[in-house]
Length: 283
Image (cartoon, rainbow, N blue to C red; front, side):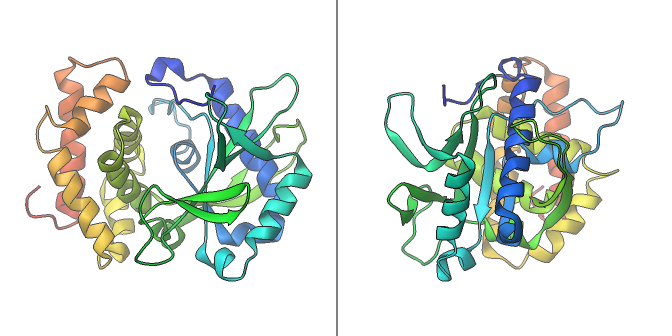
């Protein structure tokens, strides 16, 4: 199965454990290339928000989303990335219909769910379209994601361990998308696709990262001059304007609380508070 679960109840701790183990295995495999890679996507919240009794655990994720720097493309080092991953046992994945998915690779370990990794890359030129593929090799590609460069600007180095998907003990430091860039990328994702989990992920980071939304707005501040940041903040202002807007509505739907008005108000209020801290006058 490669389709992502639709509701929080469809996620299990085993899924996230597999994703973490896959990330660690990739980190041990890529080694000195890790400075050209940043983790984005659904595994980020559980890595940048520490476990605390008063914070509900993030539901997790089913796969690993790796952003590849344009430097890998310019220097053709992506060939070294693919070579190392192949040697480690990764191969091109297939969709539920059996079609090749060059932008997603998989590793199969006996007795465990498949470990999947999606490759992403920022546009290399003005002709690159969001959601299309950057060709790298015959069976290797990356999905083009505008704004991905922000994750390289706002990132946190996190130690990941203790077990790879193969059961090996190890610890590696990995560049993980920071909360500022994460909010921007999720705001863009909400506009680009219809996945309620994006709204939930965004809410979880806004609500639980640090002691207040100021810690996130401080991370966004250095990114404000980027047109993509301004566009994303405008999207947030629209998509979290009312309780019935898609932001609060889809976050509540994902958690199985579609009629929980108090929860929707909390989601909306926190996002609007962040927008005000970022200087968005319409918030």
